[in-house]
Image (cartoon, rainbow, N blue to C red; front, top):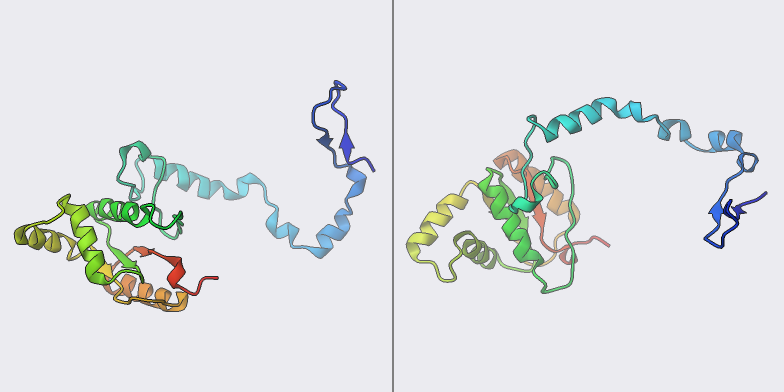
Length: 193
């Protein structure tokens, strides 16, 4: 069988991959796999497509990132997981806290597990980001703490936690407090391989 073919114009561009019909044993493929369950026409997802496009219009409004340049380009939707990664000390937690402040300003409730910082350190950092003040006055602290009261929760554990434990805690927080946004600030302090 011929797997590679010279371009029709005879040029020296990269060869095109050609898969000849006789090269595939379709009967064996259908017998040995779950292809009939995995290969579907696009129309199979028609209802989901309608929902997706409806959500982009006047339908469901999902929380957005706090930067206007990303409006309608990035949404935080229920059931999705986002991984934000990078080098140590390059501002991931800082940026993530800005996202959390933006989500809370949209009425979202959030729960954070750091594992690397005490809850007091986390609260101090988020308070600075909420106020934009390095050394807020007691009145500012009171007002900001009141604003955060029904918006932000911290999982009070410094050190490692298993993913099973975090899922258990997050489920509790979702049921008890109606929290929908959960953050694991560092996977390094979990049992994720």
